[in-house]
Length: 266
Image (cartoon, rainbow, N blue to C red):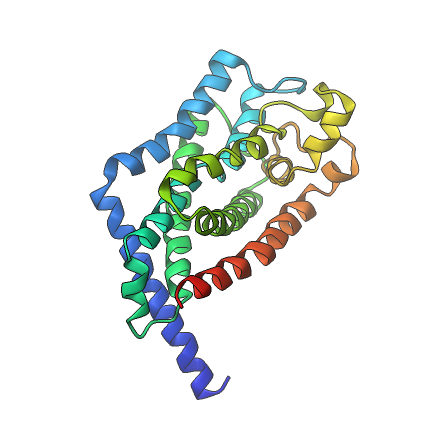
């Protein structure tokens, strides 16, 4: 790597970290919003575990089936916060101020994504702790558990870039809620709460090819929890799909977001 290239990379990393710290500073100013983002998935886990009765069609402990699925679903939650922050910056002229500074343009989006990834790590820690308190355990060792957490964060990374792109398409904070509705079908049309084997054949096939289902199935297998495989190609190759789906989504939405941001900054 040439000195000039190394300098540009260092500059981009420095600018991205500056933007990350800016986003993290919002946590101190908005503690209630952060707390709600951490508590909401826990409330869903408790509701489906004790009230609704998750794990339909699963042989084995329902809690051990449900917790990994909820960890995957948590990676889709909170996108509205990211989308609102992006649209607010666009509408308040913050982007114009950044444009006047000697800053790498993509650093704003990278900082936004990095801060939300850190919050996602906190959410996973909370959900893992609650799941452990409910009796959930992983059974395949530390390395497999860390690999499962890595797949969850990979899904989150892709979902965040999709959220950033959709936020810039929406353009206004009041449009975010309408766009956010798109997340719910992806989350609930999955095997998070029930096995595809308990569903009608056509619906089970759709569910198994959902990116969230691939991650949920893969992490169940890595954790050694029930529901890791149902004998279909998608289930047998869930770990592969849990990598390919987020990589494909990132390959689509990351450059789209960067390109749209560059266009907005002109």
